[in-house]
Length: 305
Image 1 (spheres, rainbow, N blue to C red):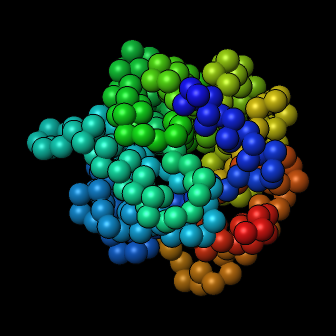
Image 2 (cartoon, one colour):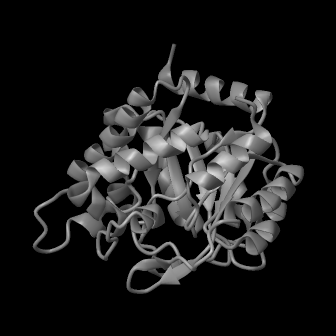
């Protein structure tokens, strides 16, 4: 059977059975476990300095109940990795990230876990004015997408897209390497992309690529509520999902600051997730500031294992 069709059929069967659980944060979880996430590499630095921690995070999310784990490739693109003086390549670090996720899945012994190959904005996910021209987007995303396809991931997960032009570019390269596509979007408080473009426009531009699902992510739960409502109204037959930020807030120096008192954070997040499920979300996970405890709470609520 064609690999793209096999993964697509598998995913659709899971959706018919109930909610699909994504994993939670990687970058902020590295920081929480004592691994520095300094710029320019941010979470990708751990591929060089602490690969065993990356793999253990993947393993912990699988143990917590995640149906999908995402490669630590949020910052392995060309313009992040191949800066002047760097001795590394986007291909090298992308392969390393995929290997860690695939190994964690194999060693877990849990059947059916999918490995998503993450594609992130080539610039800053919160600054749509920095999105490069289409030619550059296609060339740079293709490097990572080809490498992910060669590594053996199950589908491309185009994450935290803030503009239609970059979203479409990632969809095109996913199609060109023959892998299914999923996509998540980062929105403003009005539920539009950070570029100001509407989710209706986004869906119209992406629908022909038959994404496994479209999600909204990387904002506080209260902001996510508005965006999810607009996405659900626009998505038609495309399944929708959500993975919001957990406790804490962005920090210019370290990337994220965790406050004291994490004990009840996962349960508070779960209350939001129950509302998202009622609003139509079939795919749920966690973004920055979430931990394996969040995913375990979701599992206990939505999935009987």
